[in-house]
Image (cartoon, rainbow, N blue to C red; front, top):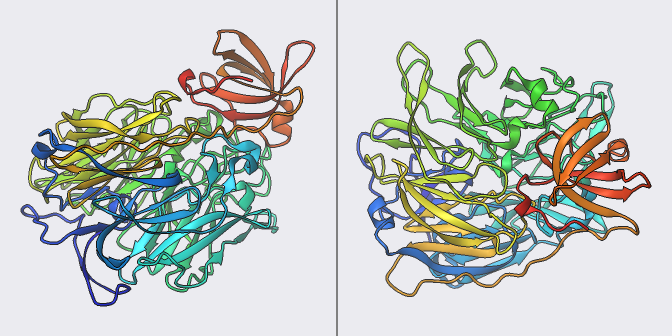
Length: 631
């Protein structure tokens, strides 16, 4: 949540004055102290709203003095959102600190104004991309800290999950780090889990085939994490999990949740991953845990209300023992067969509202449908309220209040869209379209992420911040955008680079105390107001992470024209058409499900009849500008 912190004599303890970032207010809130951003998207509802920003007004941001004011160099790509703690005793002084975690398993504490690294620590060798299942191509050269950590300001601890290579084995560890020293406050814990399948067999968490992408959640005195897969590869052993640990001790919760407990499926394909493009697990005021699941068996017939809630919004009890409720779209089978993950986007809980239904959830996925749901009922009668087309969503929504009106901000497709929430006393609530921004540049999958800052609920004080995805593989720039709540562009400018064009830049901007923080590849960019010289992005190195091909092996990319059994017709970048045989890839669980109209990457050999015999098939971006050369 967004907090204000007053430093005491000892840096490990804080007095917390909680600032209600999600309650209605009769007038504007004036920030008298600096604030912190200690969790993904600002609070456990995942609204992305900092309602105590009095410096970065729409007029100030558009006035010409807003720019990149400082940068910090980092050791690797950053997939996690930066977090902020003000007034902290660290490195022999008192600093406002921005924390950044990288894919090399490094955590940095950086001066939030000047960009100087105050303290850093590394937590072990990351797993190189070449060791991932079939060198899964939707990440950078390393996988280390992939998710956004979470900070408990009451104890002065940051919780973070690392992915390390230990004695040749991929290993997940959860750490509780002292904010001032970035050292373990208690011994780190190796993450393990088991669950019983429908045939009575025990299934174990498979770290070598599992990706921990969703942001961590701190609630109920516990830390929670969601798990998914790498590129849908090894789908015969990869399944989605939610696990939890007690704060302070890191003692695992007695129960855990395995999304898919089926003992068999038609294509030996399981998954039901939790990935949400990095969006965090959410929690309501009662402590229930909310998330969205992705695809399962591409036959379309493995969904089950009790044993495999694929393509669904799920609410779990705080002890992870019980599915309290769930919502599944009516076209689950079609989503499964077309690889249209509902779980490509996260679920946001709206703060309690007046009207007939007070607790509302919204979520969207690859097919672009934003579902508005009764968060207390989800799939029960009356659980689905309405559906809105927002464009393909590898993304997550945001929320703010404009006076007494609640606003939902979506970022599917290539535009910010602003909707006002209507909450009648007797009828269902609804979203009414208000405004749309100019196009956000992106050459990757549709969608992006937003954050909101405002001066309390003062009308027309909100600024909507967004970060684009790259449009090419070189220089692969990403940009920071600022819009007012009418969709007018206040600012845009380069904010970093993302040479890993095969993996989406799911970058979330962080706004606190007159600054905006954007973490990308090997760089933290700090934006603010100032009249001095503008900062420049530091040089970064680009690493070709593609695996070495075996003798006689080739790698191609192209758009799928048709699928007939195991024969896939693919149009390559030069316009030529090749037939890909997927038999071996499917047999060995080395295939991410292809679909007509979407791109794939195939590795294999060409036989005497010019058939491409694929040993591995991965997804590729649909934009050929994102493709590396065939080889």
